Length: 166
Image 1 (cartoon, helix red, strand yellow):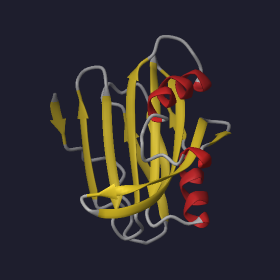
Image 2 (cartoon, helix red, strand yellow):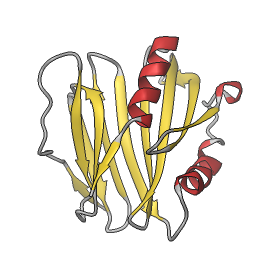
Image 3 (cartoon, rainbow, N blue to C red):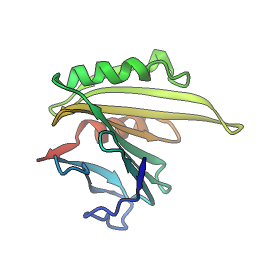
Image 4 (cartoon, rainbow, N blue to C red):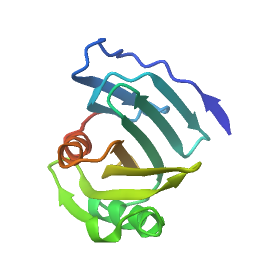
């Protein structure tokens, strides 16, 4: 798999607040626009069919990722069903906190995750925005640590209010 370290056309201002961040599909089919805090690290890969992208803000604890996979037909809800069928098996997902939501752009899932990573306990809040676009299923995952009710609202807002530019 080729590794791409992406330099995006839209760089965030150094302010702590949220700003538009653009993630373009490698084939140019569309661009996602997310309102996220300034990010420090960016990494991506594309194998010709599947695209993965991750960005993180150390200052705010927000990480977001975009993963695509081929999907012929179907809508946002079908995309959510397909991907969440695998995601729900994640042992770190706190099953009692899983909640679906829908916006004008995405079919979503919000939840908490808890566990131990390299000997350190963690609790995160997570939101996934799923959309069917240009023959693919797109999973936009936003997480924040430490977890709080406010953090959950933030990640759900980011994942749920993304926009798409063709």
